[in-house]
Image (cartoon, rainbow, N blue to C red; front, side):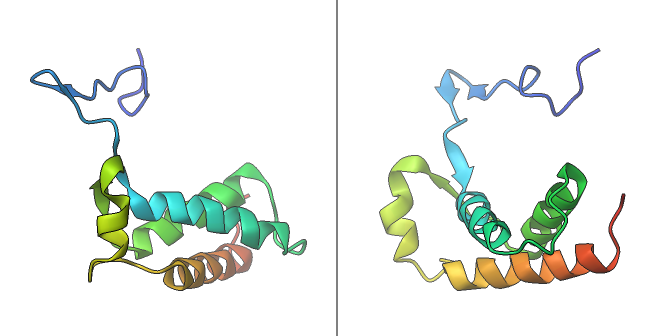
Length: 104
């Protein structure tokens, strides 16, 4: 049996409209920012569990901001925009939590 959240199980077409290109913009910024932060922090454990836990904690602390890929410019100019610094702060806070109580 395939896992419910597996990409092979999910079908992003609704009534003939593909919605798989609608993204949580904060995820994109979080991945980019985590790469930068981890590259400069050799003291943090870089195992899969610590990275996944950090990512999950950071994402859960940020509001979701789903946008159409063609709407990035409109979103970054809106009052709902979460700037890179806020995302970075969420990642650093999540790293501190994971560092204090790692799950491995």
